[in-house]
Image (cartoon, rainbow, N blue to C red):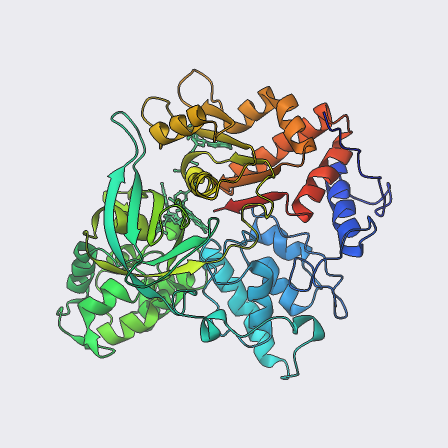
Length: 532
Ligand SMILES: Cc1cc2nc3c(=O)[nH]c(=O)nc-3n(C[C@H](O)[C@H](O)[C@H](O)COP(=O)(O)OP(=O)(O)OC[C@H]3O[C@@H](n4cnc5c(N)ncnc54)[C@H](O)[C@@H]3O)c2cc1C
Ligand SMILES: NC(=O)c1ccc[n+]([C@@H]2O[C@H](COP(=O)([O-])OP(=O)(O)OC[C@H]3O[C@@H](n4cnc5c(N)ncnc54)[C@H](OP(=O)(O)O)[C@@H]3O)[C@@H](O)[C@H]2O)c1
């Protein structure tokens, strides 16, 4: 075995500093990387932690953790320059839905090149509210030339982007087909979706995501029009009201501006309630469940004018999906693996916008507005010989199907190990025929499976990783890259924790050293995440 030597331990944070062991290790690792004390290249501008930090900004981003609550993130950013506080307001997923990563989006707002404050989809209303408050500070500040640390932040990507390469410049792609991946008995509804790109001429590399502009469900739109007491054909923004509500505005979480509008056109207790909701308060304990329709139902006697109503809504945001095909294997074709979001609140069925659009509101031959979103560091290794370990439960398998198809098409000789997991082996084993065939052919060197609901106790991918920790360590020591895709809130953290434990146990390191080691893997691009 090619044993890796532990990195020399460099202590920057004193032992008596007020941090837990984990926090001290993390900060040490971060500062070692920032200051290049380990001899590696320093972080480039635009990577986490700006290199040319202005006064009051040490370049750190300790709030950059997608599992941390916004109140804690803002606390950590207290006293920092505005752009850093704006970064702390973002959801910290670096998911690319806004068209940037969290750091660059906040820099672009602070630099006044990005006027839109509502692009952080995972941050939702909390992020939008916080950004609005911080933006008021920005508006009061005198306009100066951008700080040197912002020199690398470009104008909003869409302004210069080529067609189909940005959310601001989508192109039409043709929907080809859908196929249900779960079998009878499953609690999930996950679709394999095929698109034809030959008409729009787009291409992509594995690891990229696909942006989709979905349309709202007509039934919901018509109910809203009825609640407004309006006609489908009422003209708004040069279109019919129905067209605008289907394609241009979000009907999901009711925005503060809608409650503001409702407060202006009603009185008494209703007005007070609407005003409270507009300020982020929750007078009746139902604020989180109020989509646009539910808000109209709550204030059912109040009928905003269609023009004012549309004005008060948020624009419809695109949704991203990891591409699960390879352009090298099937040029002009693109596939996705989409988990359908459906849930019930009270008596009403709620539909996830884009997932149900792909699952049921689009027909073969229809065109959809799309774009390819480059990931922030999620790609196959440059050297095709590098072994890869892929950890992707549920729809997290999507980019790994793409990686495997690509490695097959290009004849990449590197070893491939997939950890896949889902609820039940007999009905939730996506792409089982393909993956088993890849295993038989030797393309998949190893496939490790974890079924969470087959037994009495939950069993997850990280449990399987721990079971085969010694071999996993051997692969790491041989220079394997590790990839994680899927749920951001719980799975990604738990998998990282398992990786730390494996490095500690089989790499003969203390927990602190193992945390540092895993931090190093990230910094060197050997541990990459695509989480949502
Ligand atoms: C880089 C990236 C890659 C992604 N790849 C994939 C992928 O490969 N496959 C995939 O399926 N998804 C993927 N996603 C997620 C995808 O973008 C969408 O977020 C997802 O499909 C839901 O979108 P939607 O429009 O259907 O639902 P939305 O209309 O956005 O509704 C979702 C919202 O509904 C609410 N909600 C959901 N369930 C409940 C519930 N039970 N109770 C109450 N509220 C609830 C939550 O507020 C949730 O945020 C990816 C995301 C990113 C950022
Ligand atoms: N933004 C959105 O609206 C949206 C849309 C789609 C999906 N998602 C989220 O994206 C994620 C992916 O959904 P998915 O359909 O691909 O599958 P998923 O719901 O993540 O489930 C995949 C597998 O992961 C297991 N799992 C649950 N918690 C885990 C943990 N902490 N560590 C490791 N594995 C864990 C599940 O087990 P059990 O279920 O048995 O616990 C299941 O076996 C989900 O978290 C889902 O909530 C979000």
